[in-house]
Length: 124
Image (cartoon, rainbow, N blue to C red):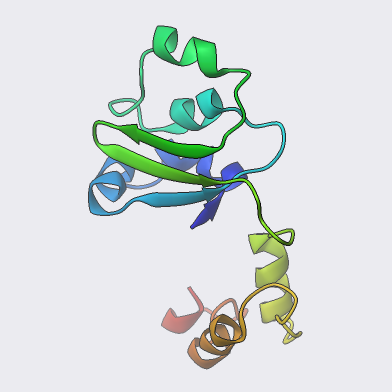
């Protein structure tokens, strides 16, 4: 699962194309993003041609986008605002994560030492 703002940069990730062969993405959408924005964020070889995405520039980023080589499930009804940055900041400063994530996820983050400022393997 990834936020749409981070997904917009996915084509710049290391071996981005390979990621789409390995898993389906769940993308948390936000107002102002279109289905075309999602399709155009894909790595170039997976991206539909511009004439295919043009009609979708005004269509909200919702539903499923299934293309040859990529499946993306778009969430448009998050019950609470989600911010990976806020989660990382709270975890790194030892603050409660209760308002951001399920208790089991908060426990995993704490147990694994994720997002701590040290550069140990568990903090990456």
